Amino acid sequence: MLTHAARSDRPIKLFNTAQQVIELVFAKPSDRIPVSPSRAAVPVGRDVEGAVKRDAPGFRVLILSFRVLLPVCLFALPAGFSLAAQSTSDENKPRDEAKREEVKKDDVRRDTPGVSIKPRQLIKLDVDLALLNVTVTDPYNRLVTGLEPDNFRVFEDNIEQEVVTFSAEDVPISIGVIFDFSGSMSNKVGKAREAAVQFFKTANQQDEFFLVSFNERAELSSSFTNSVEDLQSRMMLTAPKGRTALLDALYLGLSQMRGAHNAKRALLILSDGGDNHSRYNESDIKRLVKEADTQLYAIGIFDPIGSRNRSPEELAGPSLLSEVTEMTGGRVFNVERLEELPDIASKIGMELRNQYVLGYRPSNKAHDARWRKVKIKLRAPKGLPPLSVFSKTGYYAPSH
Image 1: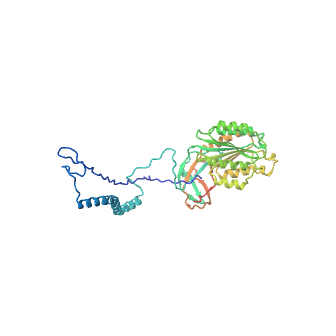
Image 2: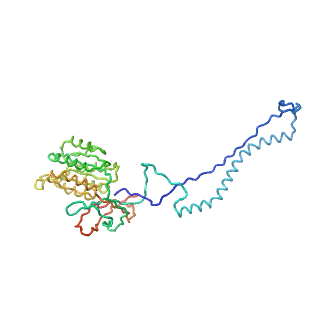
Image 3: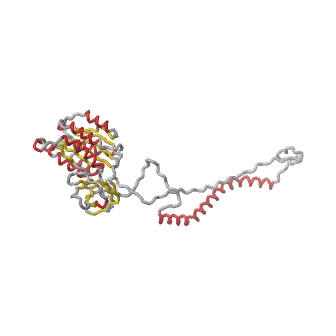
């Protein structure tokens, strides 16, 4: 299941409120120099006749009072304007609250400009949507395409869900190749490399790949890249030897997938099965596989049953691969003739390109982190033989 996402069908416009600012400019008139009738400048403190002027006591008090009161007035005037503005704001409060109530009812501002989204800008959504990758095959194991949404029924914990999105398009995929280079692969590694090359031929330009090689230890041979040639050359440089740490390789591959750039993700395992040298156990890996939104496919290069004189772990290899792949909606393809490897790898690549994607909003809205069982049933069109459907068996609900 993909990450849960929200979405709204109604556009939400954001708006800015312009704040008015009142600017007061106080202009102080400049003093004039009095001029005598003869147009000569008169010194300060004398009259036009040139005599010295005597200030009256009352006039002096008036001037002194003016000089004291002027700064006080200048200081108090802005406060008065502030109080006036506050009063105006208080008068407008009921009107603003009425507007807010109106917005709540409508929930959309129709008279404000919308917000433009820049290219590559992330949009966070908040609606739960479960997505399922679904493969449909006929009795001859051939892909069935062209089905419609009405042909599918989705059940979560035995409760039928409404399918709200449906597509069958080829989308970019992030793929990890888990390649077994243990000693038991010595006589099979050549054909296994051919199978990987054939699988890469089904890739699109937008796909990305990484390579995990493993024998008695798992190693990331190549991080995500769009260069198929780089992966092929790295596979050629590795020689098979040592024991098999398959579970450690799966852990490393699923951990690396957290850095994938595409929503659709898959692991392709090329191995003769079995594990005899891992630090992680089956329970650890199965739990991780359930949590990861990644499909697992495996090509099991098994020896004929009569010649499997090996350890119990290696004998259990086929069932281990079957369990981990079926949990995710993938499959394991058992190969006993090495000549079949390239064709099977090509088949897996085509299957990944021809899947249906069903989306539904779970009726159970609880964020309890519990496992939800998912099952898909088909309403096959009339005239078709019995069809098989492959999808993941469930997912963990979000915890918050």
